[in-house]
Image (cartoon, rainbow, N blue to C red; front, side, top):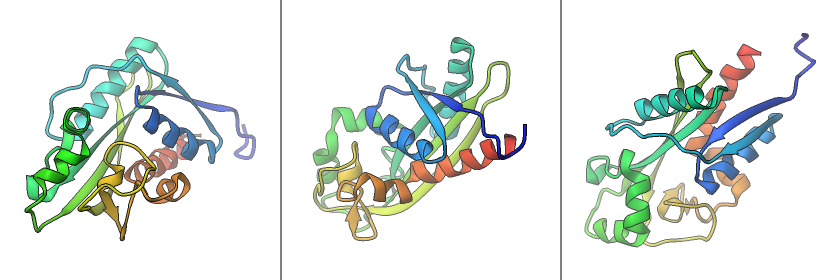
Length: 191
């Protein structure tokens, strides 16, 4: 097949997070990929880093579904809290929420933080691959904006929170976008 004859490309994205799904769907659609959501989930390893969690999730899901899959494991790493909540970000966001994270950060001078996203991809019978993207910012002093999801309203990137950015603007600069760009570069090379 010639490089100009692009076949229809579909990717199964295993996630129960609607915000992640919309973000990935929109970014990949602009590159000609159709993203199909699978909400079955996968067992998450208890690890300090996101890469082994995403790799294991992709490997497990590819084996269970019998088709190529991608997963996304993301986290907010706050420097003053020694990288917490990191790999426990979804649990902390669900159980504590942004207001309590802001309360914990109340007396902290160092508000720097890193949002990190790891895309895990695996084809049945193959080894999983991971693609990591990060964006540096800081923890805002209050929730700002109504866009995005999760920690977006408290993650300040260049003077605005991700919650204040439109989806289009956020999708140009987010940690997930940076991870997806690496994944797409690999996919395009494989085509």
